Image (cartoon, rainbow, N blue to C red):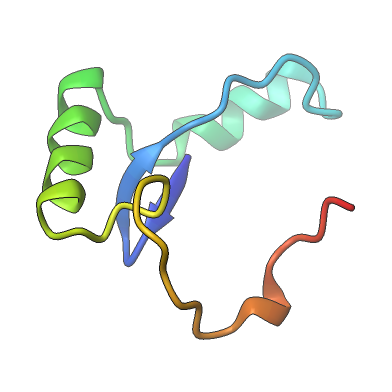
Length: 70
């Protein structure tokens, strides 16, 4: 899941996460569960506020802490 200010807006399917499937389930069971309707509503809210990071350019507070995939 990807969040912005605590609001989920999208997720990635994980094919090979590098940990055992059972461990992933244990971790996931402790997290908040969202259905597709909730994600859609949160995403729409962010778009209305022009705060959706996939659609609008945003200035980051701490870009140095982001993952560098290069």
